[in-house]
Image (cartoon, rainbow, N blue to C red; front, top):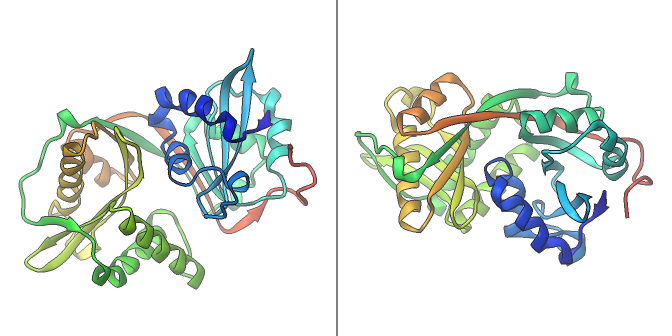
Length: 294
């Protein structure tokens, strides 16, 4: 393995392009925020990348986002590479990792993660949709971009969602992180709300986006408004809007069976499993940064 530089990025993008359905966080962060240290960039989603190669061809990419998350596309990873991965990442703060289940299993083993201490370690169904197959559900409510006036309510919803789905703690740090995420999504025009009779009843966003494919996330309806189809309508309307802008595919993960039914109803098909491991508070991978790859 070796550290990637900006000179490697065309090859990295070529490697990720046909594997985009399982590497949206990696691909989206790279496109939006780039390499951190190499570009003097300290954005929480900027990344350090390590590459594995065979005969000069990339066979795997591991990214570490400054916020403390590991994202990856390593379809050919074997236990023989575990020591190099440990060397690259030990000493860094880790809040979580996520990826295709077989690959995530390798990374968790390579890093010797104390998953028994994780607040979340689950495999969620991974769904894909070609937008030509999108079904728009009937129902009430109109979709609109989230405004600044919506952020206080949406921040409460975001925190409630992360506590419910990701087992996050209700702390000042997590609330601040949730609000910052919403502000960034709004600035990128990727945050939408469903409004009915003047009241906001659901929210949705694209937590990663490329020109032809988006990853749906942040879908939430408060408990007292569930069961009325608001979430599926919000997601479907947002995807229909994206399709007009040239997007032709979407992926997402379903947190529970009710969510899965809603997504299946608008055309999503399961393509695999996606493992999500979260630590709250975060952990440190090893004792120091002395073993980083250069």
